[in-house]
Amino acid sequence: MSLNASLLIGKSAITASQAAMQVAGNNMANAATPGFSRQVTSLSPSAPERIGRNQFVGTGVQLQSIHRAVDTALQARLRSAISDEQGTLVDQRFLQSVETLQNELTDNDLSTLLGAFFNSFSELANNPLDSAVRNVVVQQGATLAARVQDMHDGYDTIRREIDSSLEASVAKANGLVDQIAELNVRIAQTEQGQSEAGSLRDQRDRLVEELSGLIDVSVIEQPGGAIDVLVGSLPVVLGSQSRGLELRTRTVGDALEVSVRVAADGSQLTVRSGSIGALLRQRTDTVAPALERLDDFAAQLILQVNNLHAQGQGLKGHQSISGTNSVPDTATALNATANDLPWPVKNGAFTIHVTHEGSGSRTSFVVPVDGNVDSLDDLVDRINNVVGVSQVTASIGLDNTLSLAADPGYSITFSDDSSGVLAALGVNGFFAGRGAGDIEVWAPLLDDPALVAAGLDHVPGSNENALAIVALQDVAVDALGGRTLGEHWQAGVNELAVRGDAAGNAAESARLVRESIAAQHQAVSGVSLDEEAVNLLAFQRQFQAAARFVAAIDEVMQTLLSIA
Image (cartoon, rainbow, N blue to C red):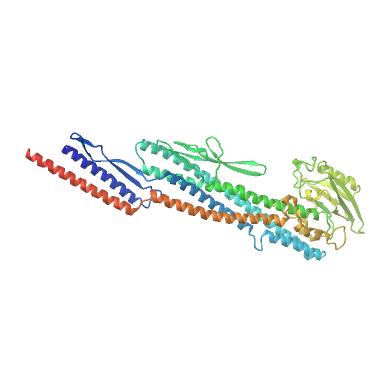
């Protein structure tokens, strides 16, 4: 073995030591850098050289690679844990928002106000002639209706907040996939299949983790260093190509549906976790059902109360009266889809009573009606023809509602509606509106509580209708799954409370899992200053030894040269 070969051994040791010390120093410099993965220097002996017949001697050390300390399986678990944690936090946030809006177990919750409303009718049944009690009934109804409307508006506000968050989150995710595709190009160009561009890969990993917080992704690394990013089985990044993400909306009936799709071809993504997945889930599984439950409650409250109220009588009759529910087509059958009445009209009849206010004499007229056949035009004609005299005139208002007007000196009352047409058209009801978004007390009652229909059969001081309305709180409603109004609402409240509690537990569990996996990841990829100090010291000693070795060889060469 020549002295030149010995010098080369020393040179290789110095070069390798310098590189290793630089890596250790870089690790120590980035010990607190978020997302930095510890780099490891791999050294290996150079190929040996034959000396003599069967002997080999080493030729030094070579720097085999500088690579990141990364466990790809652990990285995948960490991304999944980040997605789960962010998803559960969003679940918890919006479930708490809905619970706060419901404000149950307080003096202003819907259950309390519903009970107060029925209690006011109970008090009216005890004092049917008391104008102050009648005023309380109207005010309790107005308070209940206002609370329902406020909750409807609150749910709608939460839904708009979700939609806004979805739009911003999808836009952010789209920007991240673009950046990941750009980094794929830079990594491939830098590495050229020969080494690892550690800082670029760290930057890309941080972007993938950030994307994982928004949407659940999986990653497949390609031989050239680029990665493919998939949501479910659909790729959103293919090497250097970003296929993009977009939020699409479409109207289905009265509802607005949203979905997340691949911008390149419109494929719908199945998003299960991350904040985007949770936002979609909360929109579909929490807010929409809550709105539907509230609408069902309000619609049945209006129907059940109005159906009884329309057939009763107050302390006086109506000089004129108009319905609150219009029909788009007055010539089409009332039950036709085109007319969109909130409740169907059955085959039956109702009675109009016309009372002379001076003498108290009363004439009654039965009006048959079949919602599957009769239109509003038919009903108006039938009322005018059945009555047959000029005491009552039926007409269609400018807004396509049923209007009735009595001649001067006469008043109108109703009874015995077996068809449900009065409630369907909003005639002589207690509430106006169709559901939670527009429920309110019928305006004439606000102006004159004497019109509150507490009695039946025109008996002075009758309380039978008030008692019937009180009894509604215990009546099972088929449209509400056989539950009473109160039970229907409480079932939804209880279900939400259970889900809210479960969401809190899930968020805490997801946090602990993510922290545990992050600690494992940090143990593999994080920088230990103590360990790097030991490495630095070892490579420093190696460098010093190599330098001394080179100096010794140089001294030998100088001695040989001096002899010559």
